[in-house]
Amino acid sequence: MTKPTRLLAALVFVLGFFAQAAQAQLEIEIVSGNPSAFPIAIVPFAWEDPDPEPIDTVSQIVSNDLYRSGLFKPMAEADMVDRPRDAEGIRFGTWRLLKVDYIVIGSVRPSPNGMGHDINYQLFDVHSQERLLSQITTVGEGDLRFGAHRVADAIYEALTGVPGAFSTRIAYITSTGEGDDSLYELVVADADGFGPQSIVGSPEPLLSPSWSPDGRKLAYVSFEKGNSEIYIQDVATGAREIISSGQGINGAPSFSPDGTQLAMTLSRTGNPEVFVTDLATGKQSQLTNHWAIDTEPAWSPDGRTIYFTSDRGGKPQIYGISARGGTPQRVTLQGDYNARASVAPDGRKIAVAQGRGNEYRIAVWDLDTERFTVLTPGTLDESPSFAPNGSMVLYATRQGGRGVLSAVSADGNVRQRLVLSDGDVREPAWSPVIR
Amino acid sequence: MKIALRFALALIIAVALAACKSKPVEEPAPVEDTAPPATETADTRGAPDPRDYTDARNFDNPESLLSKRVIYFDFDKSTVRPEFRDVIAAHAAYMASSASARVTLEGHADERGTREYNLGLGERRGNAVSGLLSAQGARGNQTNVVSYGEERPVCRVSDEDCWAGNRRVEIVYTAR
Image 1 (tube, rainbow over the protein chains, first blue to last red):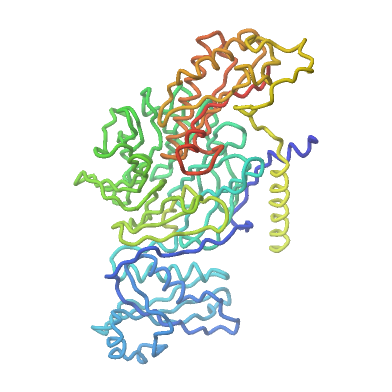
Image 2 (image 1 turned 90 degrees about the horizontal axis):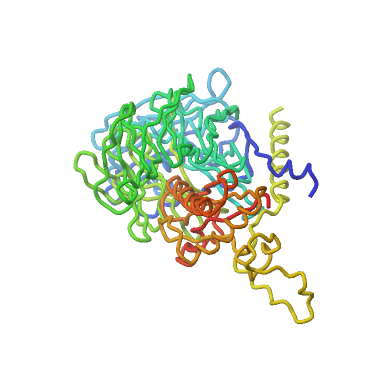
């Protein structure tokens, strides 16, 4: 092998978010549903632009988002006897007979400034005939999908009281090829799996993506130089910096809720311990000190507690420690194997990968009742990541011998699969709400 | 401009992908090498004594423990099983005899459990082998532990046989 080829073989490509990767589309498939979901009709929005309407229309995207949440049962367009374009045109009696509780009407037209579109929409309660929402969402050129997710967020919040998380993003790792053909990529996509874009590619393993609280950066682990190293990369520009590359493991990065600190696992002392680094000063403090494996730190939303996995009791369990240091307290009190905590936005629930024999499932530990609720059927479910509104948990599972992503509603009633047509998909991380 | 940029980036990716395909082979030597025994007519005058663990030719001699360079582990354990103690002793003897020898101990786990915990487990396995090598004569600067956790399986089926093959430490000589 010639030398230039060897150099190229070690090439790691780091790209900004604008780069389109040769990436198969994720497809979404609902594997179990919720019989008590709200019936809602999203009437196709009037398209008032001389340019052709996109194939995925705004109303279809809104409808799919609400369906995926498990809380809504959108009516199929084909079943709509009527397509009102304004409030006066809604025949509430007819919609009542069709057993619809809510109706959404709207239009899409070019923005007055000539760039992008205005999505004008209204939400009505069919029974009271009350208008619950009337809004205009303005989006830039090429951002109609994002605009549709914003509309779905607003409808979701108006009807459930909880902010929607449809206009957020997910990050995950893909692995394709084997042996010398291995390619690992860190991918960022919309929360519904659309628009996957590779932001890092490497012939060596990548793992553990973690979002900064402003949703602009990702911390991750790369083996591109042979040993594990932690990087922080700007998602939009691709600029990145190396945060840790010491002897042994450099793993499990996790941003503090205020974004000023990064918790991580380092084994330079001889075995894995949790450390916290101040990102402005580089000052590092060691949080745990035990011969056990201490890893997978996750912050409480108030930034006061760091949860982590430790096998100091013989088997991996979740422990909590003050972010300023102190004595760790065991948190999960049931089960043989509980690891990789993801803390719910309310700070009262912790999702974990729970092992029992050869079965691994996603379970949620309630800090108040001190009980587990098992959310998924297994058998190799891992890497739970709460949605920023706490409504769903995204996780990795295996199907047909390869890794796929699934999402489950926080009550376990609705599950959906995000399937990549080629290779392994793993380690999802749900972004914060991007304002 | 935007199209040109996209094209340039697509080209970079294509080059990177092509380059990955030509990555040099770094596979460890096969463990259970079932090479046929030397025939009667073979020249055996220079054949190494398989139990001479200071003879580098034994790395390729399937009769010698030096040709065995993978240590297997039980689930969630890092204790070296008794059947692998002789293999480690053989490598410790070689390393004691060759000051220039350097090994990387690559620790691995099966797919069960979480990835970062498995990184810890792979390192613990690497450290267990490193400790035994040192106790039997290898110098501290001769070994280096790298854990890959569950990221580099040799087998990708979700069953016990496959998992057993993935729970391993590979002894990789970077210098002999």
